[in-house]
Image 1 (cartoon, helix red, strand yellow):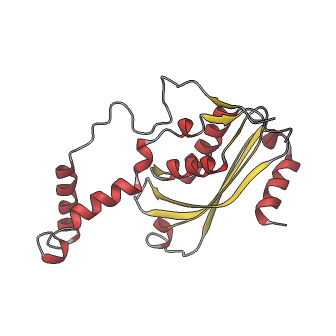
Image 2 (cartoon, rainbow, N blue to C red):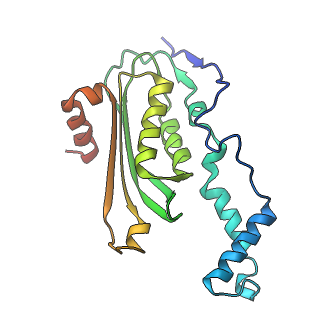
Length: 212
């Protein structure tokens, strides 16, 4: 039997979109002027040859770094397959590259994300799960918040029996400044449904990630 593809109804409320309705973005010119101000505050001359085009480059880079504010993760998971063909075991993606920026210092943190869910009536293309991670990573974040957001989005969209998310990342706000401890990994987890209720499933999730 062929899988039935279902388009979920569009949501009028989009709480996962990112930027709130009251956020008024500055113009590109205003953003570039802000970069010039930071260059001068750092002690350099924004008008010297090597820095003349830096404000334009920085604003273009910010468009890429923070493009997650333009996307709704729930929309990415709206196209699902209703017939999983009798499959009722865990679906897991591990070692998904992740790059984000700490909301406290706006400095990158880099690592891996691992996600799993137990499907019920719906499954989704695995690339969509990786894109959900990327959308949340392309925002100013804390690792703890992002871990919870990813789990909540998968749970809301797919209504599975359970969801598990683990993120392992190195924060440059800790390695390049402050205590200056290099290569210290921060690990966060979020379990929903049967993953939260059953420690054995949590252990299996971690074992699958570690390839034990």
